[in-house]
Image 1 (cartoon, helix red, strand yellow):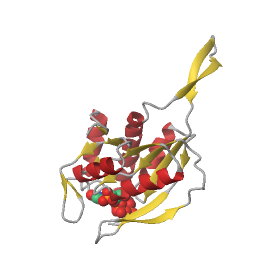
Image 2 (tube, rainbow, N blue to C red):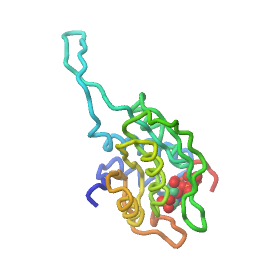
Image 3 (tube, rainbow, N blue to C red):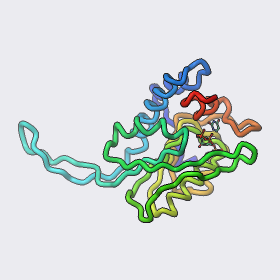
Image 4 (cartoon, rainbow, N blue to C red):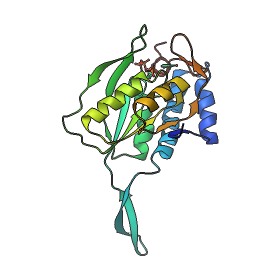
Length: 208
Ligand code: PRP
Ligand code: URA
């Protein structure tokens, strides 16, 4: 699992435990998703390119840097929406491009229902935001869409991954690094991650 980065940060582990708790209400759940997304994005963006930038501090001139890549945040509707704000706080200049995918409950295959990407890519690096990497079908489809759009550097930022989903994403797109708060044990017969946290969309939006 060479390109899988499962966070070892105590803050991530602490917040993820509260997120998983079935007694955590939607308001707290959304707060935790937002905070976890920011912590993981901090780790996932450690290799972003910078360019020199000269400024003056109140005391002296300084050779500083600024981000030199155009960054796109790509939340997968619905559940990925809750991850946007936390990452956007860190990278306010990022563009946000939404992709709508849902899993057919019977086949577990992703169905695309929203995509308004313009013809030419407007960013050079994309962070796909989706809390759950279960069978991997949705993540593979999202990367397919972004590669067809013309983006070369793509990273997947999620909260919990199942071994099955990680393997599927690595097989289809070995060039896409995967950043997670945890790798869980297995998928159940309905394609849910165990122990997981349940349905990430329903728990955020109160629709369970
Ligand atoms: C969830 C989740 C992922 C997908 C993961 O979305 O947010 O997008 O399932 O499953 P997979 O790896 O097996 O494809 P869901 O389809 O429940 O839609 P929602 O976000 O609208 O609730
Ligand atoms: N989608 C979710 O929201 N939870 C899972 O465990 C699997 C897919």
